[in-house]
Amino acid sequence: MEFLVINIVSDNVNGMHKCRYYNDTMDVIDNKIEPIYHSV
Image 1 (cartoon, helix red, strand yellow):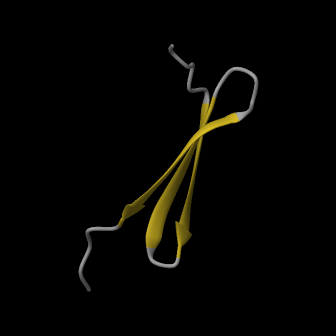
Image 2 (cartoon, helix red, strand yellow):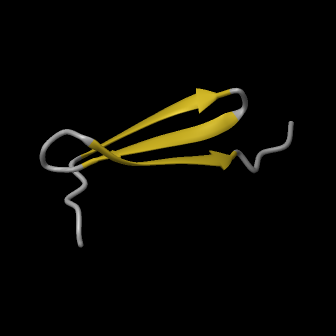
């Protein structure tokens, strides 16, 4: 099953990078949280 990604919203949550993927019905089909590999 494939989804058409038409919009991607990214936010910084507690030092984490959160990306939301929306399909053609504007519903959230997948939520992924990945750590930011950036040292300061």
